[in-house]
View 1 (cartoon, rainbow, N blue to C red):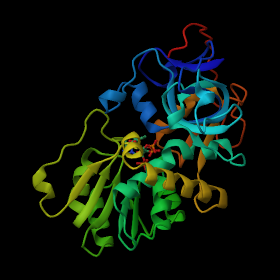
View 2 (tube, protein in one colour; view 1 turned 30 degrees about the horizontal axis):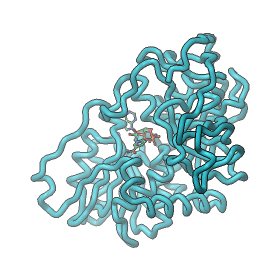
View 3 (spheres, rainbow, N blue to C red; view 1 turned 120 degrees about the horizontal axis):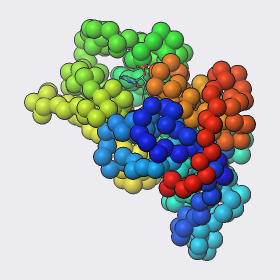
View 4 (cartoon, helix red, strand yellow; view 1 turned 60 degrees about the vertical axis):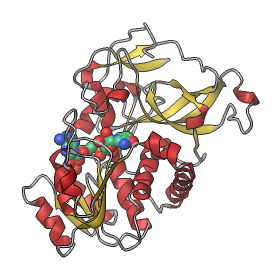
Length: 360
Ligand SMILES: NC(=O)c1ccc[n+]([C@@H]2O[C@H](COP(=O)([O-])OP(=O)(O)OC[C@H]3O[C@@H](n4cnc5c(N)ncnc54)[C@H](OP(=O)(O)O)[C@@H]3O)[C@@H](O)[C@H]2O)c1
C-alpha cells in the first residue's frame, strides 16, 4: 500500500511517499481502507519535533495520523464475537495518533465513530476528532446561553467549528480572532459578531471594548503563548479559559501565575482523549449533534484543499503558511501528483518509493 513516512524530523519535504505492507489488525482492532485523513496543525509540529505534549511526541520512523474516515476491510482476532462489534464494510471514523497518512490504517474499536454514507469524506473528517474537540471545549467551558465567547484562531480547523457550535449553543457576543483579513471575513460569515486581528498590538483592548469593559465569559485558546497570558487578563469574573493547544508556542508552553486567577477566574486544559473518557455521554451527544448538523447544513466544514497522499508535504506547507480556512485533507484515492479538484493548485510529486518498513 502507499504510505507517507517520516524518517527524519524537519521541513515538509521529509514526508516521503513509500510502498509498504498493509498493517494487520490485532485483538480489539480493525483495519480501515482510508478515504480521507486530515492534516492538522499538531502534525506539522510533530514533523518538526516541536509538539508540546511529551507523551504524544512520535519516535521515528513514523506515519503521522489525524482524523481518518474510511471503510473497515478487516477485523482483528476476536472482534467479530464482541457485542455490537463493527463489521467489514462499515463506514467509520477514528482519530489516530499514528498511521493515518496511508491507504490502510489499524485502529482500536473503542475509538471508532460512525460515519453516514452520504457525507463527503473530506467533510466527514470533522467527526472523529476535530468536531468533538470543538464540542468538548464548550462542554468543559460550561458555556451558558447568552454568555460571551472569545474564539482564537477562529478560521482554523477546530476554531471554525467551535465558533459555529457556540452560536448554535446560544452564546451571546462571539468575538473571533484570526491572522488575516480573509480569515476574519470567514469567521464573520460563520457567525462572529466582532472580529479582531490578534497579530496587532492592543488586540486585548479591542476584545475588552467589545464586551463593554466587562471581560469575556469563555475563551477557547488553541494558540497559547502570550495570547494565553493576555486571555487570563480578559476573563470576566467567573470566566473560564480552556487551553487546548500551542500553535504559537510550540515547545514554549505558556505558564501563568495563580495570582492571575484570584479574581474568580478559571483556567483548564483540554485533551480529546481525556474528555471522551471522563464525559462519554457528552462526547456521544456532541458527536450526534454534530453529525446531524453537518448533514443538514447547520454546521459547515470548510475544506480548503484536497490532496493525494503524494501531496502530504504540500498539505503541511499550506497548514504552516496559515493561509487556509477550515481544513486540509489527504484523499488516498486521488491520483498522486494530482490535486483532484479546484480547491488548491497542483502540489509537488514525491518521487521516492522506499518500499521498506511500515514505519509503525
Ligand atoms: N487538545 C486536543 O485534544 C487537541 C487535538 C488536536 C489539536 N489540538 C491543537 O489545537 C490547535 C488547533 O489545531 P488545528 O489543527 O485546528 O489548527 P488550526 O487552527 O487550523 O491552525 C493553527 C492556527 O493557529 C494560528 N496561529 C497563531 N499563532 C501561530 C503561529 N505562531 N504559528 C502558526 N499558527 C499560528 C493560525 O491562525 P491565524 O492565521 O488565524 O493566526 C493557524 O492557522 C493546535 O494547537 C493543535 O495542536 C489540540
